[in-house]
Amino acid sequence: MSSFLPATTESIAQALEAKDPSESISILYRVLGDPSSSPEALRMKEQAITNLTDLLRQENMAEDLRSLLTQLRPFFSLIPKAKTAKIV
Image (cartoon, rainbow, N blue to C red; front, side, top):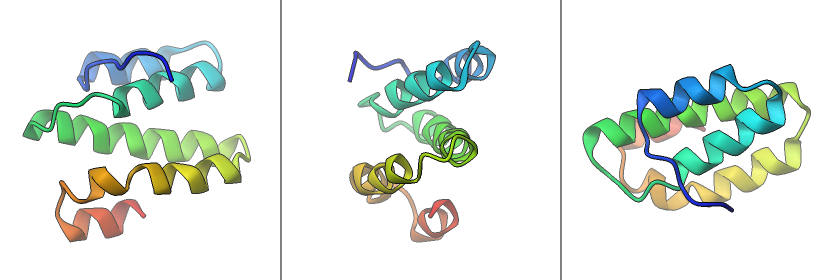
């Protein structure tokens, strides 16, 4: 995975404006790689996860979606259980 992007509204917007789904997916994975765990960063990562799961579903990338949930386990420990349940 390439270097992370900061978990900001600008990064999310960049992903949504990308020309093709694979570019959007790549940008969103980079946002999730941001080591920050500030409340704002966590909110942006939640948004990135929502967008990413939608894209993976649309692209019929079930295996990637499954591995994403595994990758997100450390993130889920940082957010309330109710939010984790909503995401999953």
